[in-house]
Length: 473
Ligand code: NDP
Image (tube, rainbow, N blue to C red; front, side, top):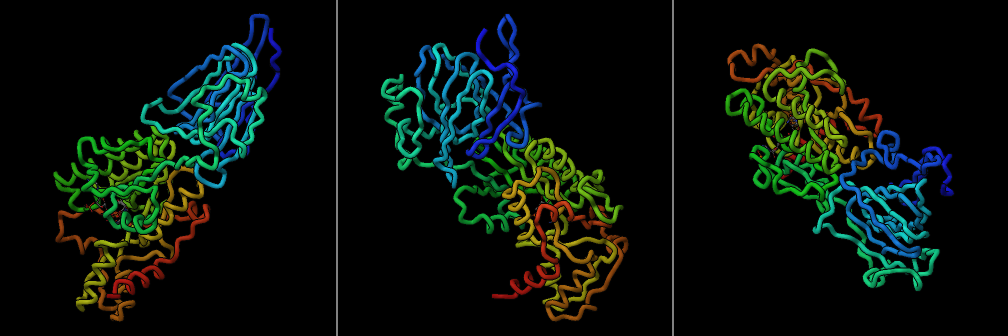
């Protein structure tokens, strides 16, 4: 019988290193020995440890007390405990950022375990002979993985090793590692943005311009309709993928070729992407549409059952369903998107400039979404740690018809409002049999997004800015 404290209930304690969690494990002993649940996801995963999914279990056996293994940060998370014996564990945050150099130490015996996030330097010294040190990791070990090392004797970290390093068992390699001042902090994982040429893609490009940790891909560089679109992407390098790419030709999607293309890009590729993001614990940002609804309900909540009318909406709804399977996902459901590119406002501004008097649909209702606000909402959700899930996003202000918005465009461009004639959709589309069905009501309830602290500006304000920017040479 050993001297373990058998009565400890399961518990977790935060540490000064962000994301690192110390666990107390109940160890059940009797005259045969003891038993413990070393990692029990359902009980142990929590706010500090949302989705640790180990893929490899390693054991390091150490014959003598005083065996000391060097401080090394790895690009994957670790869950460490011991099966027999005990260790003095030392951890130093080697991630780029404010907490670089933060130190934490603790004794780990079978009744204790610690979760060490990627990028936190990890070292231990055995306190007993025959110590079996065991750890789970959530990525397979690879020769391509880059480690960051710190010297065990670093004066700034000043780790109080119970057995002095001079007499401890330390490898020559570990004795040669750099001091903290010479350590290149471990860079965070990157962000990948797909669809960089589209309206939203361009707004994201503006927002993230100059951020060296963001990669952009246009359709030419990564074709979502290709048989294996992500073959060239190493998802383990990415913390986040923002999918701004989509097949958006609503009417062309009704044709045989368009149907296949819309499904390939909006559904099949998103399902593949969601699977890759699940495996690599990558956050997936997917952009959805008011077209996933039939538009019979006036204001759409995030959890309204999907009811798409046309092929584009059906393919987007399939994409939403696939994206929602990945644990870390934000689905931003948006409507009537206006940015750099061809869109309704640009068309109306063009007609106004040519003094044309258009007939515009006056019985479909919704709100515009300017891409700079859509991009900002994505950035907000990602940086504030808002709960994963689906969020509606459009600009604010009154719900309008297309004819109302066209009137606003004319007015803001100094043309008479009444140069725009309202026309019911049924009449407008009567001689256009090849067009896709469109939802009558597209307005989105924004409360959930606003509750996270993101307040989209009024559409009218953005419309005025958009038109005046357009008029400048
Ligand atoms: P755009 O049509 O402006 O941009 C879509 C982008 O996707 C383009 O860059 C396009 O590339 C790219 N793309 C298309 N096919 C492929 C492919 N096979 N492989 C890779 N990339 C591809 O769309 P928005 O920016 O307006 O839309 C952004 C998101 O918002 C989409 O998810 C859309 O469904 C959604 N949405 C849009 C609305 C709107 O009114 N526009 C309304 C509601 C939701 P390329 O430039 O080379 O064609």
